[in-house]
Image (cartoon, rainbow, N blue to C red; front, side, top):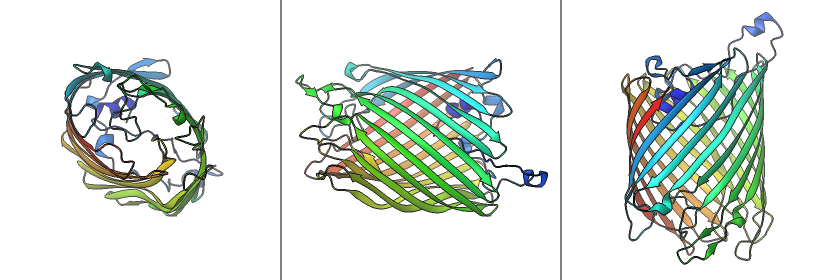
Length: 429
């Protein structure tokens, strides 16, 4: 499925580092060895090709360009995500984008630019000019050996529903984010080896409260680095066991009396199984141990059970059910907190009602347990929507979202409920 198709379907597509299999073909027999790590007997509803509804794009030499414009009209019944005195408003989103994809037989190069320009009918403080630019590339050194890399730069605002944002800010907090990764994957017989390095830089802009007092955000500026190694072993053509180890370091630019230095280092050790049961079920289940140690003793270390799990079920060719679960340690933007332990569970269903009509529903629950302060958040998100592909150039969509958060503890954050309805028109070439 090309990038333009992925954007055209209703669900938000997740990006990931390419993991095309690789290895050294020592002789013709080995070159004919089937991919023991492919999990492609079924195609998810949102990934299924629809050639008659896919954008054709424009060819430029060895590349194809896919321009796209999505126009959203969104109504929220709680614009500022507050517990008392919620107000409603309409927001208009213009989301232009363009994707550049190579069409080489080997190697790959992709680039993109996206925007999200928001204008509100009544509350102009919520207007925003968000944009991002980035790209990924892959070099196929050998048939079973590739090297991949990518980078992104983002200028955006924090949503009012973000648990880390400054609740009292007159306008949403703005931030810049830059990130890059490099990875290598190699298959030797039944063993797949993978390593990946990531770096992320965050730069938050100071805000103002309703009285014009500066809300200091420099204490959130940081650079995160991580290095991961993973080994998979195929015990059968449809099952592989693996171990993965990731180390990280988080360096903050500054600190204050209220928020001492939050520099830390940590690791994640996981083991699990990657599998495919015929054309019915596939996924990956990983469990293990996570730990984050802070340089300043004012914060208690975070450690315990960790998990990263995703399982897809295909009851029919027209329906995909996906279950996810994760438990990890995240950075906190709340004064006095070093970080928080985040536990998420999610379930989504996508159904192809007609060739050009796709229905989707999802529910997710998250628990955030902060360290350094007495605060625990519970958040439930529900989504329901449908996408109608008129032709290869036009698409229509309607979506409903409900977000409910409750926060407990002496340093509790906001508790709120937000309902949003979004009507979308998409054009693409």
